[in-house]
Image (cartoon, rainbow, N blue to C red):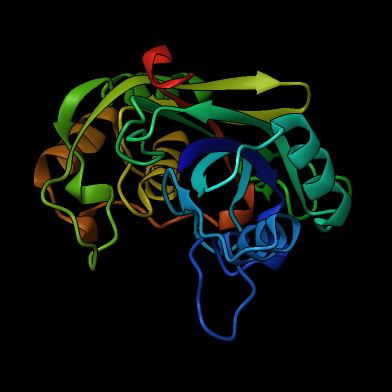
Length: 248
């Protein structure tokens, strides 16, 4: 039995999130169906984590197993030939038998895109938000996210986790082309965390709350005191990192 990591990307607009659900089109379901068709045996995949309905991925990693040796380049080509236009395989690599897409991930990165001017080209891929924002204040607040701390204030309330501790290594707003992009990187993320962080940082940018208020929201460990969750369509999972030692 050989195990493989599959590097995939997708536009999440027409999917009900990552995880397989009855009577709903999901990313995991789409890839499992195509993989099973090509390999001619029912094949399940396990992702590095779930993305919610409408969230996109430039890079998502999943693992699967096969009894037969696989020509990874040929399999990637065949999958891309039958996957819908909204999903693609970037690469397939062999990994050690106990390598796990979720538990072996050491770092994950997200980007949240905001367009200040209405644009038909960003529809469904960026959040149109025209209110004036103080970028310096937003970045001052974002710096307070760096390090190992409890992020319960930014987690969905009903979630099955042992703790809310995350180690954030990057959190900053950058103007890229004509968009405002929030870059955030951590060892793990809680459900709904990035969208809640962005919503709260927008409150800072609009000067509805101060940077000191933002720090107190982190310390409160209470979702009710943080800002709203921004819409999912501006959010992209952009990178999942692993130790090189797990690859064959």
